[in-house]
Image 1: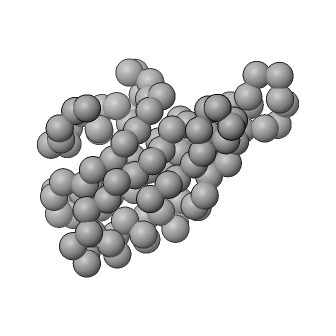
Image 2 (image 1 turned 90 degrees about the vertical axis):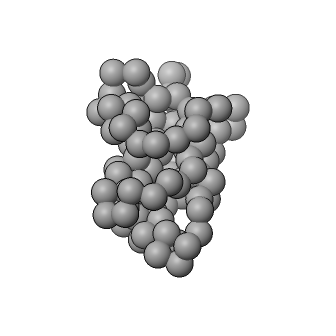
Length: 102
């Protein structure tokens, strides 16, 4: 599942404006409700996800949704995530999940 674009576009969904582009923060392909529903339904059907989330806004939304679903079942879901701040609340939750680092 692709949550946002990438930095080279630039289309990664950011929490702050892109440098030199006031008001532009990339874009997400889902609302928080949509990504949560996709993960929840897919997980219930037995799918294992590969999730592309590059910008910090996309990562925040993805980790929030994964955290809610994983709290219910604690089964592994695979996510590929870039550009996450080591001091963010998402990092703390991400580090608490069982996973293989790549």
